[in-house]
Image 1: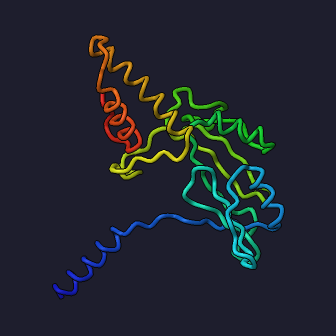
Image 2: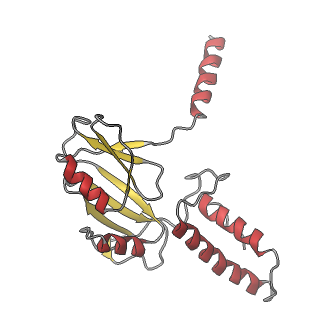
Image 3: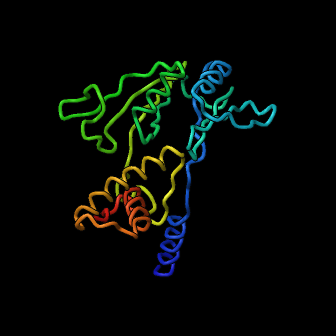
Length: 211
């Protein structure tokens, strides 16, 4: 009995440690051509699809996960899917959709009394949103995330998936470093690159920020 439990525990531990990265989400659509035109308009990357496969693949800008749609891929009703899109700047993302002619909601945030128009006044991470639908009604919710909750990302890995994300992270580090220099008596910090790096890694990992 002890040997069996030990084997089971070892197997469970081995499975738990295997990375399982979300690769594809299948969307239910009623008109493949119409959906293709919409996601092209959205500006997502139209990936190569093997001829005759009946699969259309798009990848959101900066994302590691793609979407599939096509004929006979899924039995769910068209328009029944719902997903989140994480952005570093809700205002810029909203304007990009408007400029592309996408019917997107106004930006809003949540309070104790429910949703309120406009971005979160403190621009706190995870609390500014906007929504839009594809032609079938599959819903997408934009959510502004500037720093991740602890444990949400691997603290040993720092990744910026777009030029804008990296620029915004550098700006936040620069502002924080300015306050750091003030606390140090206003003296120039020759090791500012190291401080910036520590701040950006900690911010993304959701760990304690340097002061």
